[in-house]
Amino acid sequence: MFDFGNKQPCAIALTDFGITTAIITTIEDIEEVTQQFEIYPDSAWCEGRGKKYLFKMLKKKLKIQDTYFNKNIEEITALNQTWVDFCDDCLLLFVLDTHLNGKPFRLMHPELFKKLKKDAPFDATSGVDPVLIPGIPIEQ
Image (cartoon, rainbow, N blue to C red; front, side):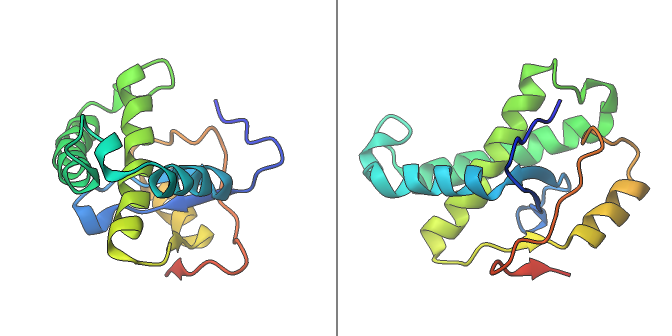
């Protein structure tokens, strides 16, 4: 399911938003989304409602979807477009939070991610584990 090519996988936690799911992404993907938020004006987001509206909407929607997927683990698959969109939107929420609030990115420590993955009822990573990325703070 995951083919990162030469990109280094990293993990992000969304617990600050009440979302228990952690996702695997790459620094390159984080930087690409960040660039989109920096390039396009506020009016380009959510039919002119802006980035703050997008942030609030995503936070609310993703909490509901997180609860749903935690109760319906069998639906966590790359073939389920709703799951794929959920993961993509989690990345948007993570990046948008740092963009709007001037926070630095904080990634999950790979060992913490591995421990949580081991204890999780389902592993949707296809064996991919995050690595330490020099220069980016991590959550212990």
